[in-house]
Amino acid sequence: MSESLLPPRFLFRFSAPLRQREPLWQEHGPGLGEEFRLPNLAELEGESAYADVRAAWSSEGLLFSVEVAGKEQPLWCRDTRLEDSDGLQVWIDTRDTHNIHRASKYCHRFAFLPAGAGRAHDRAAADQLVIARAKENAPPYRPRDLQVKSVVRKDGYRLAAFIAAGALNGFDPAEHPRLGFTYALLDRERGLQTFSVGMGFPYEEDPSTWGTLEMVA
Image (cartoon, rainbow, N blue to C red; front, side, top):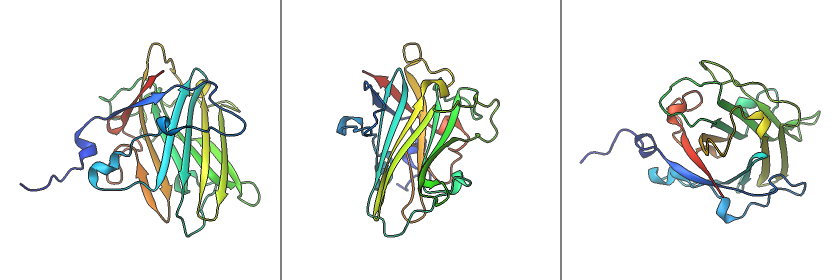
């Protein structure tokens, strides 16, 4: 039997638990344990992950942590070129709608960089990005709705990213406990790591290609 021309992550709809933590954002960092680790779905296609990605939720919003190690080249991050920079981008649909191909007002895209801000480009950066071809854009976030911290090392970095509930249009864990979700971790040296489908598919703009996170206690 010949191998499928389509990757397994395209053929199935994946769901993963998103565990609750209180309090969510702490000044000393997220400290998310092993139970908060997101699965590496790329293993279905024989690809290993170069980064550890974890996530949690509470009534306050969503928290993501990323650990990248094994780098030999320096980071390339610019807060004026968020989409091209090394770092984490996340897509969230607070209605978990998979039968649409154009984003709705409940779909969000955020970028978090371990560096790139400030005069020396050495400060972490966070911002909201527009989703191409969206039917309607999500409302813009307010100051302090996005927070990011990072520690940059010679061989990688650790990043913590907080998205407040106020930045997530329609965020209602009680009534809508499922989130449409994907992430893309960009690294000019290590490549692209994604949750759902990756390069060659329009995950940047098509909610039908995203997976699901189920908010559980």
